[in-house]
Length: 118
Image (cartoon, rainbow, N blue to C red; front, top):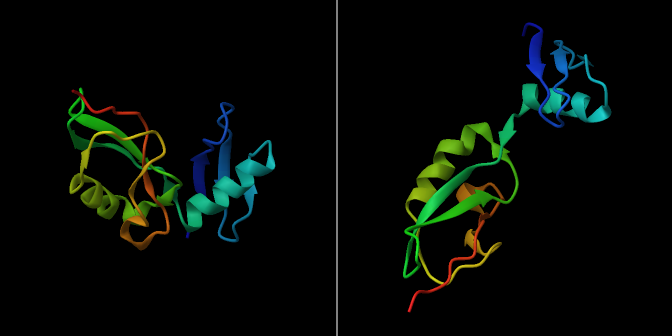
């Protein structure tokens, strides 16, 4: 594996990191940058955000996200699971939409209150 160059996304500073074959990180100004560099090279993760169809609410779509980051390799599987869901109003912020999505141990949760329309 060759040395990898990354830009840290943990804070607005955006440190330019270099990670070598031994997972030594340089260019970081804080410990979070070192942890990010190691994780990004060994097991990159992302929070997945999307929308789900909802019946009986004023709007047709409800925003959702994974409660924690999931492995980048699972992102497309997570999206397939999210796209298969259809909710019924009412739904509230933090309600679990999919428990343990794709066996990741991470839940998909609602990001908005969606009340039932009369």
